[in-house]
Image 1: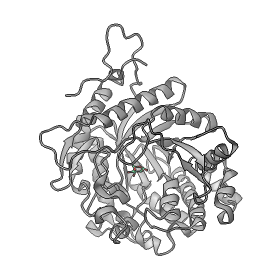
Image 2: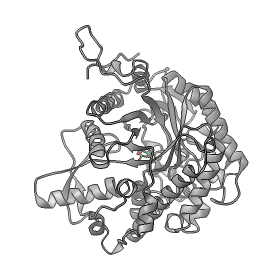
Image 3: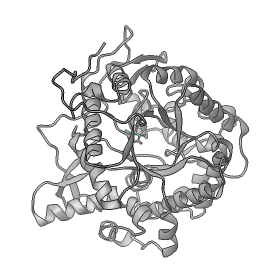
Image 4: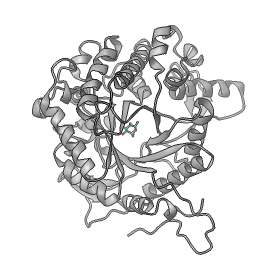
Length: 466
Ligand code: BGC
């Protein structure tokens, strides 16, 4: 049993404390955990295709089995209960609902998520649904995917099926998970599905993603409760950028990197404009967004979800495609297995930056976590993972610091509930609160899970003084 890292003593004057309605969650994504991607009439997704293409995913790993969450979700809900989670953030596989991506609804796919939502509600855990976490129906990719302007209507139609089926029971909805990663990994650098490498396509996909986001929010608002109750928002990844030096070149490079990753989607969604640096980043591939695109992207949102993992210290580097900016490794810092610097104060910075730039809007940390080495098999009923545990404690304290600075952060979702398919890294990187033995599907809570349970049970007091 892991004790509280900062135990309270009689001398502790101001315990760190989160409010009683603070949301304590964990997150997953469909293709990363579900397995059985073609079961019960589902269509293939671009991730099914990508992972079955030799050379695309490390060790040839696929999501064919993953964590078998598609069948083991009752066991996983029981795990969530032992942690004391009050919310579970998961994504829906579009091609389970609409095997061809549009048109015909697959009742068996819908029934799966109805059972999951009802199971969560019975357990007292609020479902938080992400409509798109990167697994586009392959049939839509065949029609151009995120490059086809029709995708805004396809996405709104798909979203509406879910709003009507589950809107009476689901309190939180997110349209897209990390549109920047969809464009950067999927269309610019090609390391994620569909694996393209084109600046022109990345710039187009960005516009179509935000048009789709806007149309889905409009569809949500157009349905009266209970067909679409609850709240709807957008989830972005933010990695704060700091210049490596005071030189003009490093500062300009930092601004380019920051505009590309952190403001490319939030500025249109919340300010109705695009960052001026993007024209410089994309060069001839840049096309100004039309007034229609900007207006559609800017819909009133109920919340924004921020996924935070690390920061970047940036220097000018003319050899880097488009951005001409490169991260500088911090030798004195701890790095995770994905090579990311552990830097919790930057999470506080991210949340305060958001408020300064975009104003008052409820925020949730919708993902935060770390990959550190754990063995593939575990004996006993517990796995000690001190580095991940320390990461969690530090970042929860960083969230509290942002709240103390006046930022309206209403919840925290650990990434991830389970070790899972880390996209192109396959199963080689473990982010879970709970260890998964992929040869037996045995789940073993890590010490990070125990710490999280204690934090939740104590409303954060277990983390010590503010
Ligand atoms: C994604 C997750 C991913 C995590 C760790 C986020 O960008 O939303 O799906 O597993 O980062 O890389």
